[in-house]
Amino acid sequence: MGYHNIDPNELPAMEDRSATARSITDFADLNNIGIRTYEAAPGEKLPLAYHYHEEQEEAFFVIDGELHIETPEGEFVTKAGNVFVAEPGSPHRAYNPDDASDSVEVLALGAPSVDDAAVYEP
Image: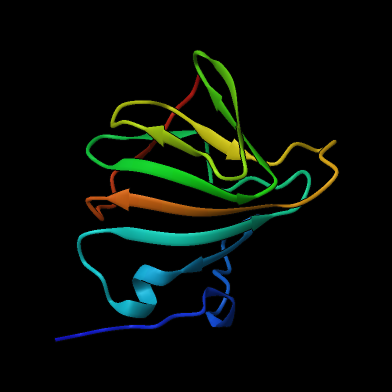
């Protein structure tokens, strides 16, 4: 059996991200779900690129602030307490706009935990 009681703020930040990202998946050595926390200051984006997933479903639970998500269908704004879901094959780019007054804090979940992100170029 394996159990983990994790304070994400104590995890090291991922170095290759614009926003502060911490991987719960890596720390807990999970195989079936990707879990990360993000804190994005104004002007920062969560993913590395505008992208979509072939197989993975993604959900962004907004803990604090407002998350903006660019899609080919337009921009979505997800407020604290709400969840934005991107189904496989659905391009998206989550970010905190330059003119935002505060940071946004997000819990991101992706399943299955596969490296299937593909860059989307509108």
